[in-house]
Structure formats: structure tokens, C-alpha cells
Image (cartoon, rainbow, N blue to C red):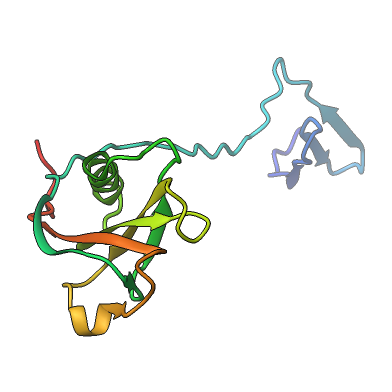
Length: 168
């Protein structure tokens, strides 16, 4: 005669090993069965980083002359200045180059272009671009009374109409 009795069994899974099942029977015989999987699955976690570059175009400012030409003054409130290459010896070319620089500077609201004389009175000028992030105030932004032999003519331009929304 056979008696069917539920037999307790345990399954233990170990990372990297096949599962093992152990069954205990009434007569205390222990049978251990190890199953060998046909494929090993290794869980992976992947992180994807996406880098995206977007180029926006904004309206370029228009330049309104509001100061000069006047010699003997220096812009003392500029947030950025940049000398032009020695090959630039024409005031109109210097203004054009400085305006190109100002267009790339998002905070440029006032542009001051000055002809400086190298070596204290040399006949060969060089030009400097000064940019401000605020409206021009001659009494606060300039220090005048300097030697005109060094601080030559300067012109100031309001950078008007700089775009604040991207162009389509």
C-alpha cells in the first residue's frame, strides 16, 4: 500500500549557478537534482547619455553712433575689451571688426572703438574694442583728459535691436 503525502521541497537560486531542488521523502532519502540551463542570462543595466547641440540665430543689433569722435578719453566701465590686429589701420575697418565682435557677445549693449597710438605717439595706430552691458553714460563710463597722443579718437555706438527670441 502506498500513501501519498505532500512532501516539502525547497528551491534555492544562486547567482551564477544553476538552481538546485532538494526533496525529502518519508523514509529520509534525500534526492538532490541540479538542472543545467541551456543558456545563461546575465542581467545588465545600461545608461545612455544623449548629447545634442542646437544652434540658435538671433537678430543682429544695429549700431547707432552716439559718441565722438573724440580723443583723450578711455572707457573705464567696459566688461570686455579686445585689441584688433596691427594690420587694421583704418577707422571704418576697425568699427566694422568691433561690431562683428560685439554681435558675438550677448551682453554687448554699447560699443566703444578707440584708436590707440603705440609707443606713445608713434605714427602707427592700433585699435581697441570696448564693450559695455549697459546704456552709455558719458559721465560714468568715460575718463577724459588723458593724453591725446596715446588715447586717440574714439567713437561710441549703441547696439540697438539685439534679438531676444530665436529667428526661424
